[in-house]
Every structure is written in C-alpha cells, then in structure tokens.
Amino acid sequence: MDARYSFETLISAEELAAKVAELGEIITRDYKDKDTVFVGILKGSFIFMSDLVRQVRLNRLEICFMMVSSYGSGTRSSGNIIIKKDLENDLEGKHVLIVEDIIDSGNTLTYLKKYLANRRAASVKVCTILDKPSRRETDLVPDYRGFEIPDAFAVGYGLDYQEHFRELPDLCVLRRDGEQA
Ligand code: IMP
Ligand code: MG
Image (cartoon, rainbow, N blue to C red; front, top):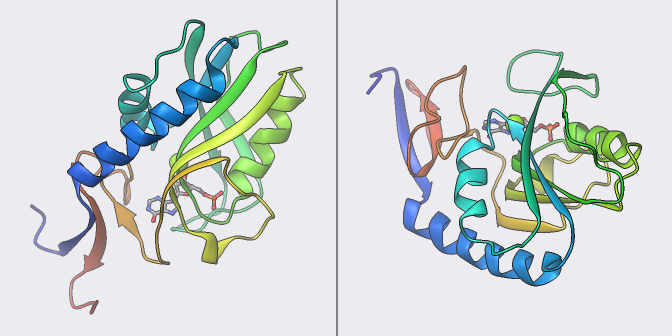
C-alpha cells in the first residue's frame, strides 16, 4: 500500500453487502413487473452495480452504463457536465433507475435526471450507495440510499482518488500524510 496515504474504514465490506441486499429487496418490490433500465454512472458505480443486480429479482431488466465527467478539477465537481459515453438503449416508456456511487453537490445527477427524462422514460429515479447531503448545491434527493456519510473524502468500493483505490473492499476515508482525523 502507498505509504503517503492511510485509510480509515468508514463502512466495512460486510456492512456494504448487507445494505445492498436490503436495497435489492426494496427495489425488487418497487420494480417487479416494470420494464426497467439500470443506468450505472462510470466509473465509480461499477462495483455497486455488480452487487446490486445480483440482489434484485426482476423479469425485464436492462443494465447499461454512461460515463460522465464535470469539468472543473480536483475533488470538486462543477455544474458543467460532459457525457463521455452515452446510452445506446431506447428508454421510451421504460423505468430508469440511475445507479450511482456517491452524491456530493448533486450537480451530476440533477443534470442526468433531466437528460434521461427527455428521452421519454416513463420514470427516472436515483439509487446511490453513499450520500453526502451536507455538500448539496441542488435540491436533489435520492430515491434509494445506502448510507449517509460525513464530509470527508472516501475511497474504495468503486470510489477513487486520482484513479486509485477503487479496488478496496471497505469504504475508507483517505488521509494524506500528516493529516489528522
Ligand atoms: P456531484 O456532482 O458533486 O454530486 O459529484 C458526484 C461525483 O463526485 C461522484 O460520482 C464521484 O465520482 C465524485 N465524488 C464525490 N465525493 C467523492 C468522494 O468522497 N470520493 C470519491 N469520489 C467522490
Ligand atoms: Mg461517480
């Protein structure tokens, strides 16, 4: 492990798994007989998506991914969203569930909800495993949420810092050398 950083476990792999199972049960109930499209937002959602789809039992589920970024830099997102990979799926009349790793300012999802609704989806809802409501800059409220976390920079379970640490099984707070908890 990189000696410049230390990691404090915030949510263990076991706690994440239990929560995903709970969300899967609720989502199964809500989407049972609907034409459903899960839209994962790359790259952060890839682990949550792969866990969640194995905890739902839906008859007509499509799984796809978009890649977006917000220009601006560092650890802060801006309201200017660029779509780097769009969907090929036809959404007309289908129920869309956006699957996201974390909601921070809310800028990315506020933009994406409108964008997907404009593609004539029957409904567009949001499921996030993590939420930092204290940082919100829009009125976005997730429809399904795993954990509320404090305003700290988290890595693991798909989340990165400069493209690293996505593979950590626990969700951790990243501390740079010399930083105090
Ligand atoms: P928002 O548009 O500010 O809500 O940005 C959400 C995106 O910022 C997430 O999908 C992540 O890619 C990234 N992000 C926000 N907070 C964190 C964090 O604590 N760790 C890693 N990525 C984060
Ligand atoms: Mg993301």
